[in-house]
Amino acid sequence: MKKLMNYWMIAAMAVTLTMGVSSCSSDDDEGEKDPVTYELKIVNQADAKLDVDPEALSEQVIKIQTNAALKDLSLEKVNEQSWCTASVKSTTEITVKAGANPNTTDREANFKLVAGASSVTFSITQAGKNSTGCTLSIESSDIDEQYGMYMYMGDNSGKTISVKINTTASRWKVVTADMMGEGDGSDWILIKNPRGKNGETMEFSLAPNVAGDVQSGTITISAGDAEEIVIYINQMGMAPATSYKLFTDDKKAQEFANGTALSFEATYAAEAKERIKTLYVETDGGYITLICETGTDNEVEDEDSWLGAGGDLDQLLINVKNDNTTGVERTLDLVILDSDWNAELFRIPVTQKAK
Image (cartoon, rainbow, N blue to C red; front, side, top):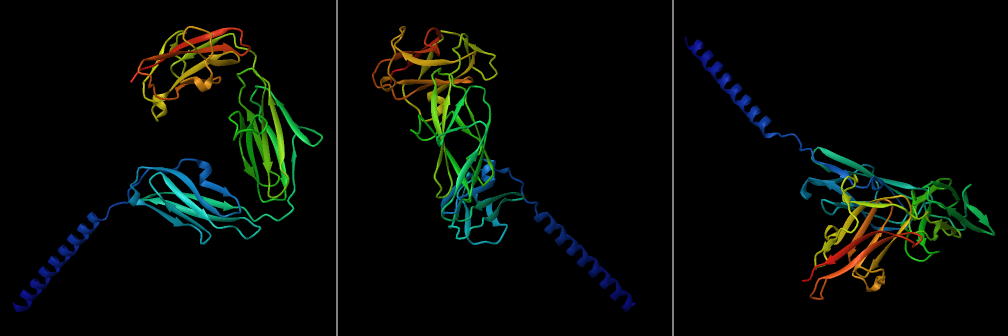
């Protein structure tokens, strides 16, 4: 009988222990949660594969987009290296720094941005150090060479022009300028790939020239210490428009009638949506925008006008430049003429309220 009682006591203890272990195991399982999946991406895909110069990189900003909190973001090295560092500055920015490359060969650093169960990788390739006495030349069936000068006369077709660039430097780079080298960058000479390696092709196109007059600019190619190559660009204007319509939506379903007035608040606002109004264009040719005194053809010089405007074949942008501190409402007209300055195509009375 004593043995039997001992047997039942041992069995009961075993059952109790098993239930306790099972209960603990169940509690542990409930405590373990799957990692959270966040939205996580690099805004500009070109930043996912950065290509930088051999010189030291003080700081390069990479824009990111995520719904994770800053505390949930971290960076991991994918390959072991010490010349490049990356850090998370905010929920919208990563910064990258790199030392100068002492070698003539390229080197690469890879990182992974992590947020919970989500991750995205990016790389930084640093060009090799350039030797002295670099060479630079170009090849293109579309570019004319005369007496060592390179020229291109473009139209408004949007044609893509290809230029093969040969160099002994580790990279070539391209910059544009308006008015034969004046200014910093051109908004109508459109470069597809502003840097590359020996033998790679640079491509560019020209935005439509709606203003009518010939416009001029430059493309400057540089590579190491080689002598720069400058391509001089001239573009003919479009034939003058005979028809001009405006719409309030990008689908061009809601027409904005000729003579319809626009109104701006008295205070110049930093946000573009408050100081810039966008209308959508449908036209068959070139046009120009003028700011005129109300109800007249008397043009107001740009430096004297509180109103600005400019457009292309897709959009017309109208903006106020400053606060109205006159104490009274002020008005001007935005006038659209054909690019030959012969016919008025459209007129918009514009008002800025008084404070």
